[in-house]
Amino acid sequence: MSFRKASDPQKTWVVVDVATTVDGIPHARLSSHGGGQITISTYVLTDAEYWVPVR
View 1: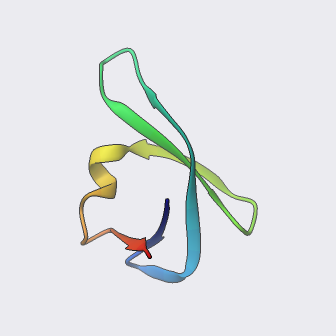
View 2: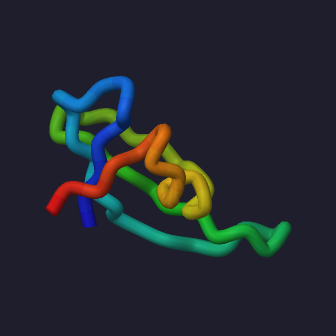
């Protein structure tokens, strides 16, 4: 699944891994085509104010 940041719609981020941290919160590791990687809570990905799914 792919997402774009609402504030930066030019860059696409692809979910490459999903894991649950020790506090029980699921996190997704995302990779951009430009080489960057970030890890964020999967709950944040459901907030359309910040992340928009790419279909």
